[in-house]
Length: 442
Image (cartoon, rainbow, N blue to C red; front, side, top):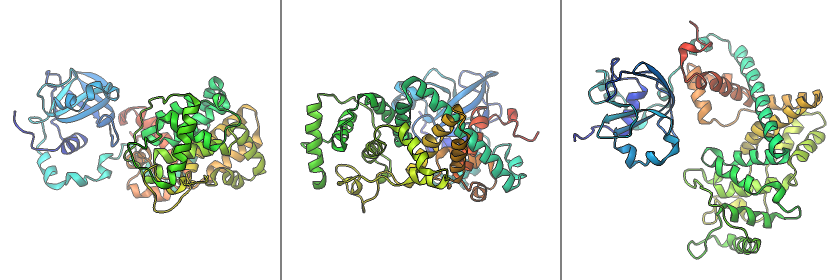
């Protein structure tokens, strides 16, 4: 077998830049044409998501996986990974025997311009701006004044908040308001890598099952034990300042008679402040802060705000502290350079955007409480611009030319939310089929 001269990264660039011949064919002889190459996925899972590919005259929507050799599908473990079940095309340099899905072999079907790309592009520094090229709608966005665009995005942001709140109320109808908020908060603490195990933990340790009188040490022991995150001190060396807590936690855990639930945690790749251990301790601290009664706590926050939006935000955004060693450590084995709150302003802003304000807004609509709804909407629109995530970055690259325009257009969190909402409801919903999109000037 002839050795592939390129890295998988460069083959991904080839696919992203559409450098295959117009009349390319799959290895089974069917013609293949990409209406949309999909969004380049920089996390775990298929390389390109939400692609739209015509194979043998049939439009297929799904994911695209890129390898040097087709057999790498098996050596990389994709055949046992459910994340790859929606793969509609396998793009490879050489087909040496892969899975029974349409396969595009690149080695004899590249446009001549690929050579120039190879000379010009250092693959290790392939610019992010080219990973997500502008959409056909970018012209319409470019012709819209900044002020008008901010109004559009703010309106879309409010719409996103209200829909999110309605989904929360639907969950509350099934599991109760307190449990619904609790699950959403814990899911938010998990970030992208650990949303599912955090949500599962909140379901396993439901609020109904937590003892009303349980104090912080007992709750921490219960959560860490159930999560399977208590360290085995016969196998690892823990920090001296964590020794008392670990001894207490194991004692409480054994007395509880419970079993660890075998949750799957992704413990690598996160920033030290965002470690699973710190987020879990922060979640327990939030539970104690709201008295294990999230709905009542939200209502109390509204009462204390006295109709003042900024005061409502102060209620939600005050950093949560936790006595003991937790603020100074990353986990049981590693310290931080300096102590810092377990849940700081950035994470609490995300929880406020995704859970607290949407729930209050939706509940106010149901109760026809115009005062609370106005308070919540004003607070929502006052939230400052937050951190960028992958979805927002992709939306900015798709819509704004140049992308640096985002600094002028996205001044608030609501405007960021609005841009993501439009991106999801048009680009992602249409699988990036610009020819079908009402935003495109035809």
